[in-house]
Length: 229
Image (cartoon, rainbow, N blue to C red; front, side, top):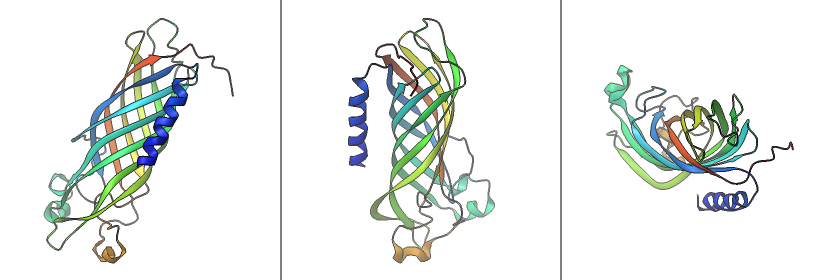
């Protein structure tokens, strides 16, 4: 994860020096987990999610985007609508650090240099890398740490709405699901091969998690040329 953080800082230092408009700000919201443990509601934020976000507005219709988000994923079987999960009674908490990079596409032109109020819905997708702890459940259903960490790669699917509330600040509301290529976030599949016998749940379905929240970004930089390449 240290290498990923260095990559982010290097990218930002390059983009800050360019003659394009930039956005940098904070993300605040909540997260919820969808997997083999806990409830399966798609949008039900239960844990705080906080982070930083950077955008390079390449044109009035698309932006390159980076974000770093911290949260704690939680799964509690007793909160599920599935009677079998309620009886099982497993639960976990897993802190994650997510780095996300990709493209943001707006439905309408979002030109911050018009000097008028502008707003638009948008979509975002790309790639995510979430660092998380590994653990498993013992015979009594208690979480046992493996004292190792893994990276869960995934694809973000985000729908949002943003508006320029002043000449320098942009406020956005978004909901974004992350499909991961991992089934280890909830401990249903242990990381160590010798613990493979403790795997359970639907091994054909990987884990998901969702962020719901707002971003407030500060804009700076020269007017973009919006020339094609």
